[in-house]
Length: 261
Length: 294
Image (tube, rainbow over all chains, first blue to last red; front, top):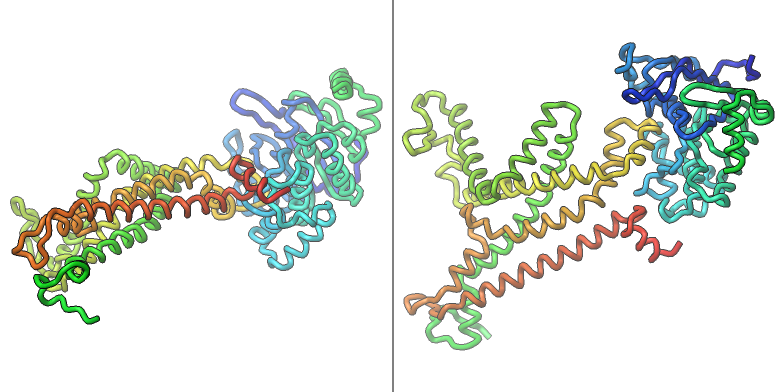
């Protein structure tokens, strides 16, 4: 039905449910990302798109549903609303292969840019420091801020911080990248330097799931767009269809609002 | 010039004064400054360790650990310091001696509390009666350090707890998202970022610690205040160096000593603050960025 590559999915979410107390944020969502897929999650605020992304690397715990990563199914302590991941090692393994880029960058404030990039490779992946530094410098070069390696994040512009955060994500050599509204905290002109990097990554064939408000970005980089509304998938498909001929009224309304915004 | 202090009554002026300032009691006075400095040097790191343990304990997931941490902080904070300074050394001393008594002389069956007396067998004494005087003094000093550290550790613990809570959530979340475990998050992110929020509180505590060191006399340690009163009070001609009431001058020396100490501390804390502010998106951090230039 959906035109996607047919290899084994890198990330597969089945029937994800998540609620905070009485508030149901996700009400049964299915998403599959295969190698090289770039999936954009769009929807209005409160539609659950960020929560869905955070459920993938278990920063949030979904109460029902199945998460599979590279063929490995997440094991839970029990069935039911109080479940937690049963295997900490599995969580760590998944998180190291699923790098996240946050809306507000979340670079570690007490470390220079270079230290931010090598931190997780050295402490979590146990990479040799020298090796990690070489790789980090190459990545900072790639995102265009190699000259800022020894500067603290607070001394950088928002666009530079987000590019540093992307370098930090890439340093983990991840199987997939998770972007949580990476450009929402940026001015339009700073946004572009980050968009450029994200485009470049999409062009390299990296697997990515992207939560965004930027419809142009979603249209340009993704091969599959998911429109979430009130915790369920209202409509999905290739960007040409979703943006070109939206079927549901809600999506039509959402897209009109996004254009005028 | 060779000076003889053998007969002070024939000396005058500078010679008299220099002999006066070299008496054995004055040496003890000078040494007591070192006692104060030593107390500070040993107490501060111990209080920080107690404080960190208390703060980490009070935030622990395990209920018993949390209760111990919270209990320590609130009990010690809730009792007047002076009471605590008097209570802890006695309690520790009797506790140690009681344990040694039970282990080392089990053949003694009489209770250790006999009327008003606390009696343990001779070999259970801490330190032994036969031990040299300096060992007794070191033991007393160690008890003093321990009680100061316990009291200030509780206050530091409260400061640390607040500082741990003040570290922005997103900093820890990023560490989680990159696969760090709880220990790594603590050592790599939480602890280094906590200091910036703890330092102002710690600097207050340090100043207060400096200023309560005269309480040492409560614990039987002869500190600078004791000696200043002792040496400064008027001496009749029965003494080798008779002089009127000079306490004013002696206390002025103490005043300068404490002022100097607190001034140095302020400078050190300002430097530390600068170091930990580096990179923080705070007002202090921003000022630094301004100095460094973008």
